[in-house]
Length: 196
Image (cartoon, rainbow, N blue to C red; front, side, top):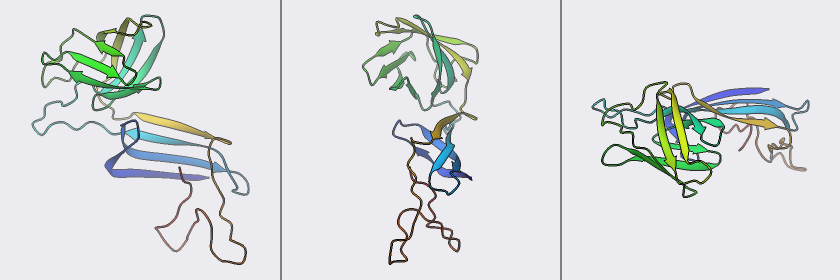
């Protein structure tokens, strides 16, 4: 079993544009350490930083429950006015009157008549934003705010045998050279336990 935690001095980001301040890793290896049996990688979302004057830069950041007019709901984490939902990514912008508008990478546009006043943190916990959408499936969408910060929000990736590649290091025949990741007890750097 391997357990480790990395805290980033400068937030790291992924290809979806989320920023993370911490990575927590738990890996369970097979008896001979030939493969990873199971595990979990958890990324802690970084909180948005306020402007130097104390004003809120991204008033819609936080956790929201999204309810669809056709039924069903999901939770999203908005960070720097960016979020992903069901494989699509969205960016929120405020127009000159402070009304949010979002456009997805799939071409969907959502708008609301509710105004977000400059410097405010947007709706309080428990309050809602009512959106209309160009999507034929969801003409009306309601966001209910669950949290105004991302202080303890994590994104997880479960690892099960067969969906994660790990190669045990074996000496090359006739050579002391190890191929692939290896552990070096006398060095802090150069140790690689798994590679994603």
